[in-house]
Image (cartoon, rainbow, N blue to C red; front, side, top):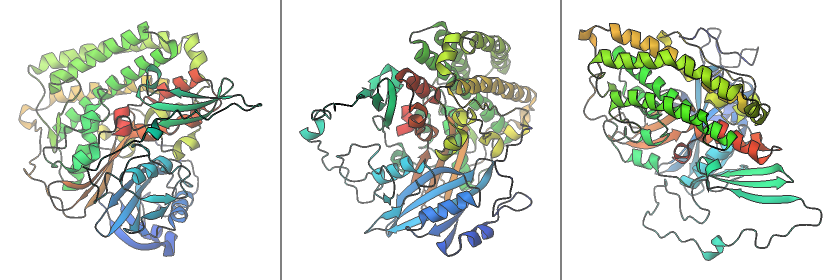
Length: 561
């Protein structure tokens, strides 16, 4: 495992943390005092129920005095007798310390105080909760729909939503938004639409940009063009068989194994399923192949953003990604939508003959150092690339934390945070590898982190292959004995996450005693990372903003879900 220890930002021991480094929930309750009206037991963390008009005070106390500086996600849901928001909090320097802040609101008046004054990332998360569930958040500086058009009628995840009602967009909504606009005598601003269908936006993303001369004065990412109701589809599927194919479609850039593992880890902890070590090694190996494939495409498209044409860098990266995809195809039978993991293990063992499969992996690992050296010659040593990426797209670490940034985006700002080490799962804690960080805080640093992470992924894969080659044939157990039908106890709640290629991919599940989730919430790393784009782009030129967007490595299928 990694021998590094995450750097602690605070010297004093936060309230609620014992001398042994454990979390004392009773001390947290004492800290919050009369703000707490009830306590709940969730699988991963204790939940503190607070009044809807005291949210900001509670979150501020937990952040400032107890050290909970990472708002992972905000889950909203509707019960028969109330609405509910859950703020999932943890710490960047102690990931296993988790707490949930549960905020119920009455059905007749679903209004809650916003947490955006404490965590900037809450702005978008609360907008999504308002859009899909219908809870209003007082004090949110930008409370409007985020995935659906402003003219949409109803909230799709509310219990009384009529799916058959007509959705009408009036002609007024199609009017030219600048029809009545005029330039003032002293004005030098220009409104520019970038996207949603434009090569520079990496998919169907609309960026509303205001220029002051040639510099960006204001920027608003407009998402929702690829929303596919993945959460609701998962709520309509059974735990055991019907949900697993969906995660492949969130981040569909060869990262499917990582996505599947996010669901598998959550459901397995929910149902108390232990995965055999042999299957854990296979999961770890295949997940790192997915990470390499994802980072290769990030490198390829980032170079395309900078240079503006299909250069050798793009071609070389796609070439190496194809080799990884061939290996994953041999293992899973698919090139993108793998559907390889199963609750309790994996679908099947390694392909036969095993020697040929291992030889293909060894050949790739032997060639990879030379390939990476080529990329450094082509990209990181390139003067043009440096001019476009060094000291552009600046993202300070405290700002990144406030927006809930994770993955290479956070580590490129010097934040030493990686769930594979900080909240171990799979076989990572048995292996020797390192977490990669860079304190450059710019577009260049985020690329460097991804290139160096490819090296660490190869290091992990090599150790997994060594283990698999020597694993006794009689002990190759690929799945635990999982019941055909899973029915977790009613009102069991859990939030679990894995370190996906783009950051923390988390899932919240609440069970209702049936074989289908009552609530299924996806915490997308791309969704949170994209919120940082206005911070990175303000004061920059348009080409620098395109570079900043490319450095985030977002996939709209995961942003919109």
